[in-house]
Length: 299
Image (tube, rainbow, N blue to C red):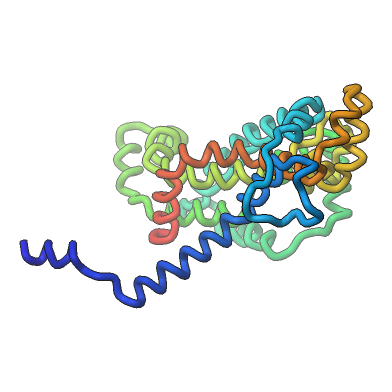
């Protein structure tokens, strides 16, 4: 009882206070850019000074969001990004899990040679021009699948998955094989269910990559109807002034849109593009934390 009371009344040491202050400041520094983006996105044109940097909100205006949501190109890019993210995660997780599980089998023929070739790709590549020619020959130019298939496998994730599968006791699989299960059944019904936190972690990683995809779209896609949200965001950040004028003419709202604060439109696009991933993360947070610990201890 005395020990419990001492623990409850234990005072913070100077080190604890210093660590708390330093980590709090780092958290504040990390959070502030997001906060600044949010308050700029709801700023009124008349309420802003020449500087876009300020701490406290000076106005509240949703005109930038209204203008953004009225643009059909925005919704088209949202749809493209959703398709790329969903199909991309399914494709990437399928080949990553299957490849990692196969490479974790020490008796697989050619395993060491395949691992060497896979590791080779982490340090060397053929260059942009040969890569473009290959993608062109495969018919992926101006094809939404160019953002899914060529970037489908992350070598680093594959190696971590393989190392994790190596930690699963072989006796588990041997007992399943004695009951007549094959490798595919073992993978789908035994290995993947017990690895749910680990799988959720890398599914989130792949989802973030696919949602933020812009490089392949920038190089290979010229059709505006197939560009993802990040390309729309890039164009908004770079050419928001001309974009405002174009949208004003097409929607016959030139007088209204002329009063929209340009950085507010830019920041509104940033906020909207970040919402889906932020909304998904809380549902995977529990698995994410467990998966990170599994990878750090057993990987």
